[in-house]
Length: 173
Image 1 (cartoon, rainbow, N blue to C red):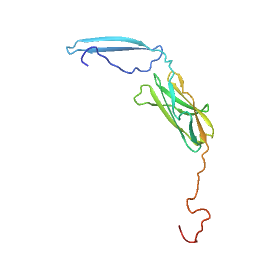
Image 2: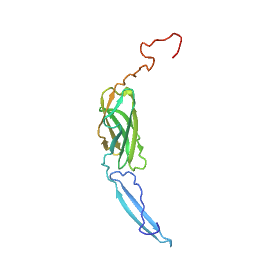
Image 3: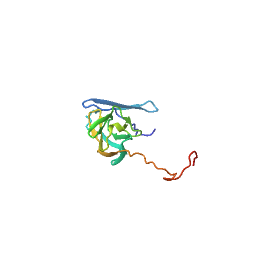
Image 4: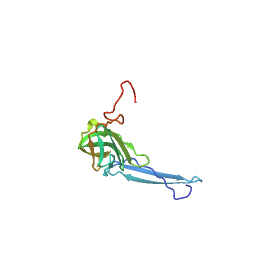
């Protein structure tokens, strides 16, 4: 813009407690006149835990024991998430050391993986995710339960011929 007041926005790098940063702004007008201003910002400790949620599977989901289960995790953090862990029945089953940023969402992240049939028994299972930020804060998702059932064998029947129907050797119907 060419009209005052002037503004600029930018994303500050993660701050460390006890560190300070000086920011200086300078402007020059069309006649060569300049003006400037300077401020000092002091870093504060990051004490906010990431917000994390299991996107899939949905609570109450049911799957057969021959299928993979897609696990999708998403969330937000004010500074950035450095690791996501997934727990199945309280045991760590997956770690994503570099979750992807969520497109168009400042501080957002996503992580995906699949639970294979070899990791699951026919039972009700509990799933939970944890997200860790660079300051060591940990966020935990609400627990999701899903059920794994035995895969039923296929059903086979004849449409024709009818049971005990006569047949002639060497012919086709």
